[in-house]
Image 1: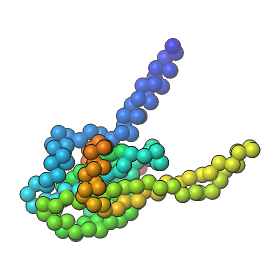
Image 2: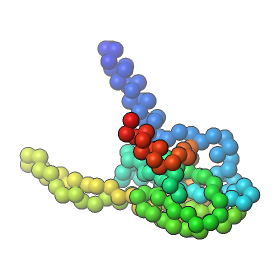
Image 3: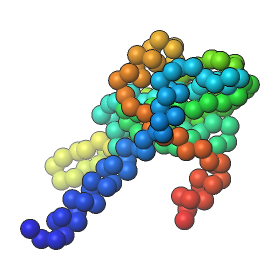
Image 4: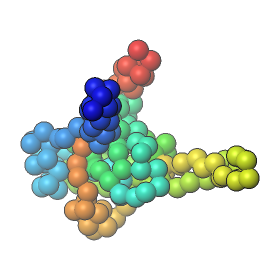
Length: 169
């Protein structure tokens, strides 16, 4: 087989693994599985149920001006925060909430589509779809059930300005 064929397969495998999100550390995984925040902290879970709609597009998640990373299809992230008022940006939507020490908070990111018009290609008219990510706070029982069906990704805690600078480089 030609060498470029092997290189193409290798590149595709690397890109596929990169799009799945990094695995959490063993400490992150243990904290998430316990549903018990450390003393004087709150646990925040942000998840995205697996689905075909927008499956190849990640949703950006940030809280209080710090990027937490991107949330792929069928994954969740978990991180701790101090008690008080917070602003979570999940799926392009701002969600304000007040966290209490010792509590867990659950947020789900849904994907919906909207028509952006149509494209005519010869005898076929093809709809052009845009994807909307919608974040919302959800019930703990509903969230715990959903989290059992999906896997966790690592959280990247960085200032938003640093994230923007990295994207531009």
